[in-house]
Amino acid sequence: MPQKKTEGQPQKGYPPQQRAGERPRRPGQPAAKKKLPWFRRLRARLRGLQFSRNIGIDLGTATVLVYMQGKGIVLQEPSVVAIDTNTDRILKVGKEAQQMLGRTPGNISAVRPLRDGVISQYDVTLKMIQYFIRKACGNLFFPPRVMICIPSGITEVEERAVLDAAHAAGAQKTYLIEEPKAAAIGAGLNIYAPEGNMVVDIGGGTTDVAVLSLGGVVVSESIKIAGDKFDEAIMRYVRRKYNVLIGERTAEAIKKHIGAVYDHPKAQTVEVKGRCLNKGLPKLVSISSKEMIEALAEPVTAILDAICSVIERTPPELLGDILKNGIVMTGGGSLLYGFDQLVTRVTGISTRVAEDAVSCVAIGTGKSLDHLDMLQEGAINLSRERKVRL
Image (cartoon, rainbow, N blue to C red; front, side, top):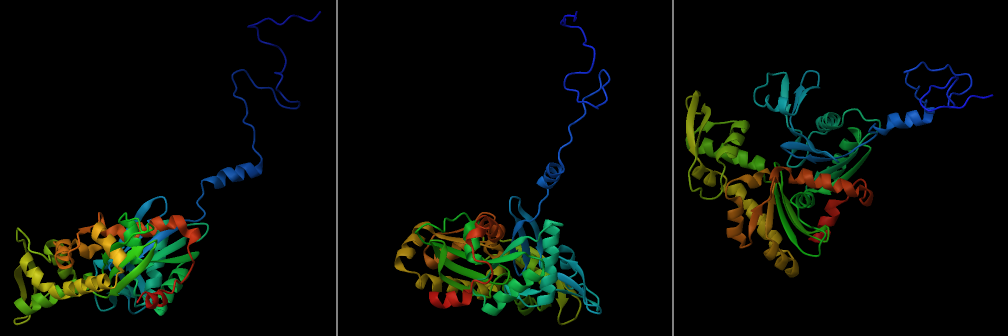
């Protein structure tokens, strides 16, 4: 007679789930994991692998910023390249190359391949873009899709040079966006609403002034006067007044410490080291922030003229919106003390500097990556559109 099963007693024989041909498990031995089919194992391995990425590049004359979709700004370095002139080999790129400016021996040249917002040395720019893409993205299975911001006054030839350089540097697809449009998006303006917004973007090589509405640029003007011209104006002023020669890096340091275009309530001073042109010996001079107003008068006046020119050509309906919304300033040049107050006094329109003004263009370029499928790849023929706007 078969014995009755009683609770709490171990059963003899193999467990019912044991398949034929399998070795019995010892007491306390964990059950063997079920082996997944090969295609499921492959899918699990590839699930965490990043095949391609979308990145936005603010290809500035002074600084290059890289925005990665989903991560934000991942790279911010000077657009400087150090080259060995004997072998044409690139030695350093970015911060390390910037430290070499004005301090290189005869066989090494530290250059800035971008001038006035456009490419001036194609081969060097190509290598620089390639270096920054690899540093930001690492090794990818597929090349990234890249969006690059460009000045609104760029020509078709300069536009094509940017596209060719990005493609040769390893971009899968390249998209272009105008700097004032990217700056407005990065500053948090709703440019797709049926109302006017005015943006003044003062970068390193160019100043872009534009009125935007319904997602497009209505009136714009781009001039090649910006941060680099500020440095040159400071160098000329120190040479003219104190008969002392200073370099670009020293002029830039003066601009960042005491640069001002409006009366400062507390005058600040900085000591500057240079070479006396009379004796040829080192000399130390002291410069105040009040002197900066006089030194920067010429380039600042040119920027104010460009702002007034855009306002004159703005349709009346949009001008009413600008009076209500005000003018937004972005870019490193807008951080000069009192620039927003000076624009308010000249134009009569309330002006403010955007939060994180230096990164606005890169942030706006990165936010535009969410709509890549709706954008046109390649050239956007800005010069042709500019003729229509005028």
